[in-house]
Amino acid sequence: MTLPTVVIAGRPNVGKSTLFNKLAGRRFAIVSDTPGVTRDRKEAEALLRGKRVRLIDTAGLEEAAPDTLPGRMRASSEAAVAQADLVVFVVDARAGITPADSHFASWLRRQNRPVLLVANKAEGRAGAGAALEAYSLGLGQPLAMSAEHGDGLSDLMTEIADRLPEQDPEVDDERPLKLAIVGRPNAGKSTLLNRLLGEERMITGPEPGLTRDAVAAFLEDGIGPIEIVDTAGMRRKARVEQALEKMSVSASIEALKMAEVVVLCIDSLEGLHEQDLQLARLIEREGRACVLALNKWDAVGDRTATRRAIADRLETSMAQMKGIPVVNFSALTGFGVDKLLPAVRAVHHTWNSRVATGALNRWFEGALERHAPPLADGRRLKLRYITQAKARPPTFIAFGTRAEQMPEDYQRYLVNSLREEFKLPGVPIRLLLRGTKNPYKDD
Ligand code: GDP
Image 1 (cartoon, protein in one colour):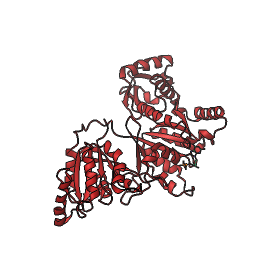
Image 2 (cartoon, helix red, strand yellow):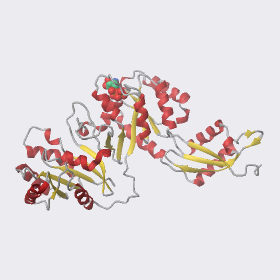
Image 3 (cartoon, helix red, strand yellow):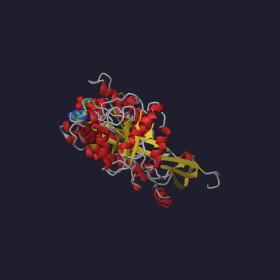
Image 4 (cartoon, protein in one colour):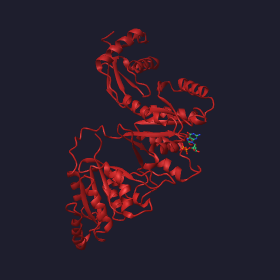
């Protein structure tokens, strides 16, 4: 099940963008931009009367092609309306019903989609009267409102929510996977972002009224929505063309804190640098799942040697992220980029996973037998049982006598064995040790 989609449609200048921004609220407002790409659609996730919806603004689309206005409106809105659970059709009450409105309305009636008619700019008494004219469109009772002044906004939210199916508030599998793309300047993060989003989703914005800070980009991979967090740094950089102000590593750090999965983007021509390893350690410390992205693969000469050099560096310097998924591709040509999101999904799944307590303790017994815990102050440390306290990332607690004195290398042994047994590559694993209440009784 995906989120219900509400599409805002209508001819230019009726106030669609204002309405979109009011409904979306600052927090959810999103816009992504690429210089030189025609402004396209704007999407946001919004909460209306407790229901989560995907809001699509078709504003801007109609400015693209130079033919007739009704034709342009229709072409640009067709795709959006086809996936709509509800179309909010906006007219300008002050301007009255224009031929373009009528044309669009009659097309809309044939699309068999629920339509909510909104007569916007209907502030004051004159506006309310003018709204009545919209009855003539044959789309039911118009809701008179003023997006700009906020009049009628609350009614509109209720009307929209009433027309959408009930949602179970407990079901949150439609919550987008939060993804960050981090890496050193010039690794190709912006290029990758643009490649992932695809040109048809780009907007040249920024729209007035949209916050610059709360920038995220959404994409769909057939499984569900993915939100790419903190594209702000990349956007800023893209605007300041020619790398005067390259996205810094500190911007990466902010991004990865907001993410569930982090794509660590490497310039394969450069290999793994100390800064890359620093980021990797940070990803581990913050408990995020990670995919290592080897970009610029198109330009790599000796691929075997490059792959081996990076694998060796990983082995020696990033033992704590053992088994991290590695994907090589070219953001520039697009080669191999299709492998990235499946890898992201897989590691996200691992990051969320829970191990059954029975299986966990069977493994634990075996692991303790194969390699007994060491002595501390001449006395053997005794571990009794283990449980998974939480996921995201997988976190385990082992209980036992003086367990908290367990040396680090033994803890590492347990974590590695756990990772192998339950197939948890590429995610940090937390192992906490708790001493039992009466430590001397067991000796
Ligand atoms: P960012 O600083 O990480 O956002 O990096 P950019 O996306 O701005 O890319 C930096 C430079 O690397 C630009 O000149 C890109 O064209 C180039 N670049 C990005 N991806 C690739 C790739 O896959 N192959 C090659 N050969 N060049 C790339």
